[in-house]
Image (cartoon, rainbow, N blue to C red; front, top):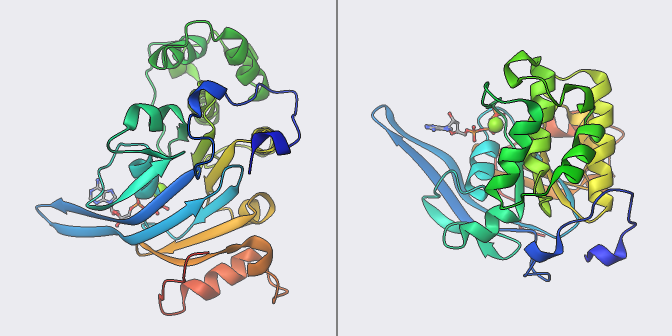
Length: 272
Ligand SMILES: Nc1ncnc2c1ncn2[C@@H]1O[C@H](COP(=O)(O)OP(=O)(O)OP(=O)(O)O)[C@@H](O)[C@H]1O
Ligand SMILES: [Mg+2]
């Protein structure tokens, strides 16, 4: 799917310079496994996962606690090394071409990690600096506005509430206008107003051509936002279907379908 084919909302579009591989898949995961080794024994977090996400898709990555969602995201972000297999972001191999793959990816992490000594604006300027963006204030202002942070721009990070900190994490992930955005439980602990404004903003980014991968335990969010759902269980792909298809034969909500699938024997479904 190309950017040109989508409606352009009044937000800054994806930076074109980053996307050298314009025909590539947004995300390509081939036979990824991950075993964490510790003195207490090995934990197999991912077992032969393969996944393809086209540019412009809005994908829900769902699964119960411990299914392997964050591990997969951390592999895409180059923070965790897979035990086997290969992953690419917009065609860039996350292990061997990580400078480019990282430029293409923005991850909102599950954990609230921040430096308490900087203000919100300083935090976003420092993050911009990591990507060599020295004159990024217009986009930073746009992010602050869209995330309801404008009047907190000069507040120290440590003085923000948990929900406000999460907004800054979202802004931080978007500061380099990544074409691929991954949100790992972005709405955990945030109030209803932020949820709505956050979803409106993420939708507009998706409409502008950004690929979005979302993990959430709020299945009604996934049902309304995601056009396709990948369900992980115990490090394997249990289902990979369009949301409409998952719900087609059923009067049930995604939550009911999800629970039913989780309690079936784990048989990986073929890739689309
Ligand atoms: N650094 C680590 N060392 C050892 N085991 C780990 C590590 N990180 C994750 N695990 C294990 O890997 C498995 C997958 O964890 P992961 O955090 O990827 O799951 P998740 O789907 O994101 O879960 P949640 O919904 O709770 O966030 C779990 O069994 C977890 O305990
Ligand atoms: Mg997780």
